[in-house]
Image 1: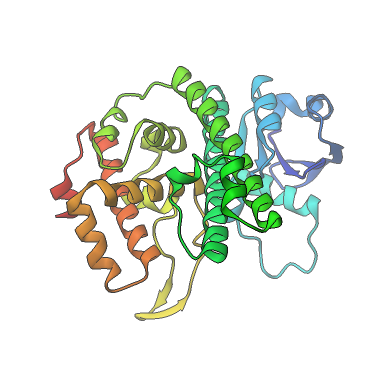
Image 2: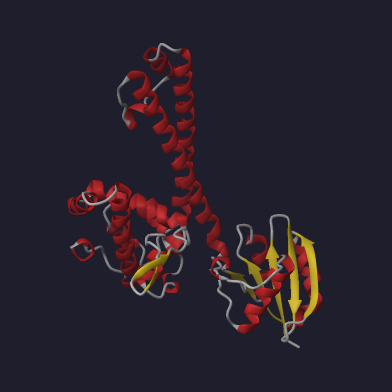
Length: 338
């Protein structure tokens, strides 16, 4: 008898359902999130299990890795791509788990990518860096706003990084405003210090693989962004075409058309937010360092919003990087922005 298991995973518990080839439930249980508990419950079915489907939630690492280590064939479900029958009058965790098992049996399961465990931690460390960079930018902008509101003048990022508590107190008469600025400066200094620590750790562990080394020839892409793009992309072969890659990077719009008319739109947030961030960052730097790319951006900006023009540059950079990685080629600006 061939069996199929589906696991609906939550923050502190999971529902496991085991079904046969006729979709008859042969086992069902709600379990706490503990690998030994889950594997012990699955053990009686191990020899007959064709596969185990785990719902692709934010906390799947421990379960997928643990079951794979124990020899189970594990599939990660792409829940965004899974659609339930709309006529269902009642759904619960058990029915969701049954549906996962059924899709696996039918060979119609939309699967998520199980990122290699050995590189996952360093990828997540770079994600932590990007989070700290965003927080640092937020604090920097807050300081600039305080200067603009209370002094009627701007202040550069480089000047902010040189501010001392004494200089802040001498600048603002109101002690409350001075305290607000000093708080932001203190937090910003701490964030910048930790960003450097993370970057050193990444540089000491990550080497750009063949195909990704040429990313350094792209205006706006330095070592950290190249490493981020490499680790967020993974194996480039998993993207059949360039359109799949830029869609995964959240760099394309989403619309549903019928007879040439707009019928609706899809979820533009499907994909990898960190890869999107990397290409947006690259676009910002490319505009600064490349005259050709800057002119392209300015032409776009004249006809639309700034963020749309910036995303158009990021889109072109992502397409170029896809072909560069696949072909191990250097950046050709005339091909990308000609």
